[in-house]
Length: 494
Image 1 (tube, rainbow, N blue to C red):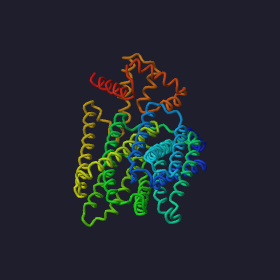
Image 2: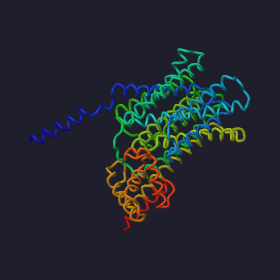
Image 3: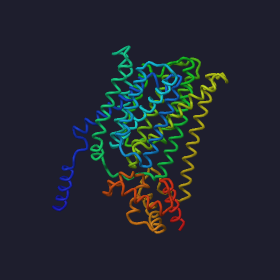
Image 4: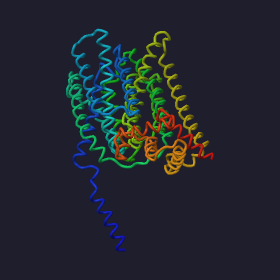
């Protein structure tokens, strides 16, 4: 009994000595990050010259540069080629300064307008990418609430600025953007300390294959939703319905953001699942399109609802992929950068498609709505079929006894992976260190995380990876995952 009391006392002592997750400085940094992120998104909404809702004749150029920037950084981060977030930050500041200078010049030549759109797309994308790095340093339970509150701040900026500073939209935009940039720099300076404080060992609840399968479904739904929204937005621009950056849209978004914060606070979610978000988002978008099709439907209100949906869907992507990146220790820019890149390019594609079809086909709004709803139904059906196909594939490999992410499957999946790694080691004569690094890398860990975990230099980790890759004749992480899956199947058959 005394021994147990002593053990409890020791455990209590360890808990007392452990630093609190949130002290005053950490709480202040979290507050700064929330406000700064909201300011950046709010400034984007105030910008009438560019963005997904701009009526500028060269707006598609900005969207294309926006999407390509997201995708380029996402792919580079996946292959561990981005060493410092500050490089992205200062590049974003420089590009934003070029954008501001082009606006001040007042030139309306086509070359200047194209350069303006390109600078805008790159600048906004790079700043958002930097905020991704900040939020993946916090534990998902906290980052989800911070992002939702940031969305609330974002939606408040439009009506507050128009009420307090009517006629000074451009000045408010500049002030809000500069304030956000200062807050972002401060958060990046202290980001490593936050990451260390929030660090914990989280065993991924799903296999890497399931994570990528879920990502593919998310990207597919993002592509279709954004394409449909882009098409409708361009059709409304033709009809001179300028609803996207108005107080009505802002108030609708405020209501959605408050509901989102309340849901997170009540349910205390630690992770958002895209397989639940996609059908809900499809139902919301289909309902908005159905409202538009009614003869008594207000096109202006329907357009504001559409913009609110698109903004809210992107916030849901943040909630989904920030928590996924934290759990798997993936590069902060990868999953969300991939999804946002596809989203921007899809909006551009939808708007371009509307431009190409509007006059030649003389499309009726009612017919457009019917086609859009049909596309949504087909998309959700295909996503569901993809999920069933993945489940069937798991059954073929006799892994479905454990891999459902809603059960305690991590141990069984880990056993299968360990068996595959043992077979890899025997087949290709891998060293113990190479096996250790491959184990972490195949689980989604970045080279930097692995270096910290094993107390090695990042260069040493990459050297071990290169040697292991050469022995196994693989050239990418995906080929490594495929090889591990093959070994798992071989073990199960044997």
